[in-house]
Length: 437
Image (tube, rainbow, N blue to C red; front, side, top):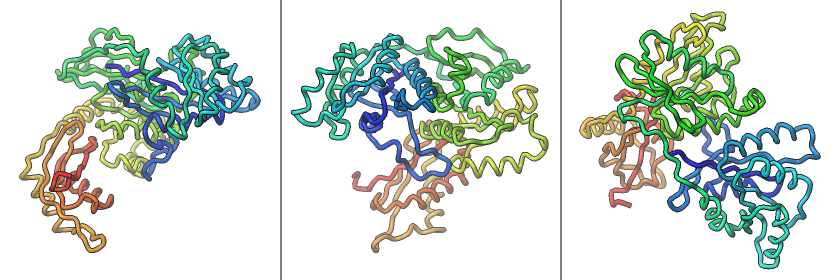
């Protein structure tokens, strides 16, 4: 099932970020202090009743600020283009102004389903203000207060009311689906072409889909694969490609459908924050990953892979378990090193470990390094078992899960990785009190 996409648009200071955080259910702009993970999020997933959808936030359009307005307008156009439903947020305490009508005209032109959310209507005296906003010419208008959580269920009912089931292509479960993701101009399409043109590869017809990404089924070493290419915006070409952070929209759609994520870095340009941002989404989605340093032919000292690996490890500290492949899609040098890594990390995400071995490793880890005590109490681990795959999930039975410190959890994860080959796949550690709480 392909998830619908919803975009939030509006002029500055109407409360888009507050409503975004309210719908997603957490303050996305403030996340864990993980090295290399960008704090500024414009993308989240929303679960409501039996529905789930992607949510995009956008910059506020202000025609008086010419310096940034063109870029923000293009970003908003991209978000509208990608969206199935657009939520047009206006300030219920302000009169409609020129910015609101500019956005209104963009939405009318796009011919999308639109819900007008009149924000900041947080008391009965202000509720009558809602009628002023029917002037915008949209049928669905709802009063909300993002700050006080008023009218949010009504807004969600209107958003999801127009959703229609969208069937996705269902591939045989034995086919490994992997996506090629990364910021624009890192060589994603070139890499797909290089993979498909290699001698060992047998390509079948391109799957006919209604999706933005292009799926291609092929065989490699007698195994079946599907590669999902996310490159290229359909409209306005390079103008759309130039807005880097909105490549996240396409990346997220591809990540959702993939078994493995191949994250492409441009060796010529080096690593930037946006590379880490895209990689963090793949990690948080629980997908096994391979990091690819493309355009390796442009690096003057091509033998110095060790030095560049150290740089990658330093920049992507949160992906220390992910293999790195150096290649050139253009010249096809070292292209043969990629497919074996994709297969390996996929198999590792399916790995199942015997309970007896797990408990032996964890017992040794605890003996080697006792958990720290807190207020006179110390964590006790009674038992551990594997409770899931894709990614592997391990459940620890303990005396009190409140005694888990993130540094000790990281220590246990490292011990599991030292003893079992889990390269490339995230793993989940879950702690439950022995009483079942």
